[in-house]
Image (cartoon, rainbow, N blue to C red):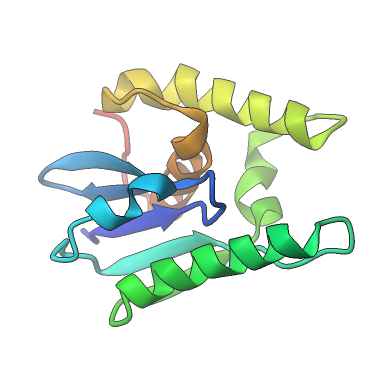
Length: 145
C-alpha cells in the first residue's frame, strides 16, 4: 500500500497524509513548517491550479509560492497533479458560485470522512481530504474503517 500525501496548495489549504498502518493525519498550510520531513511518502498528489485572469496577481503569486513550498519539501517523491474538475467530477456537486461549491465540498467531507477517519474536517483540509478519497478510490483502496 502506498504512503500518500494529498495537498490543496492554496495558502488557506492543507494536506492529508495516509499510510495503511497509522491511518490519516492532517496538516494546514499555516502549519507547513511542522510537517515532519521524515514522513515516509511514496507519492504526493497535488491539486493542479493555474493562474486565471480573474485572480489578482498577488493571489496567484501566493498560490504558486505555496505549490513550490510543497514540491521543495518532498523533492524525491513521485508527484501526481490533478485538476479540481477531475477529482470533483464524481461528486456531482452543483453550485452557482465558488463559495457555494466550497461549502458543499466541506459539508461532504464532514459528513463522509470526519466520522470514518475520526478527524475534524476544517475548511483548510476538506479539499485535501476529498482529494485523498479520490486517489484511494482510484487505487481501489478502502478508505473507510
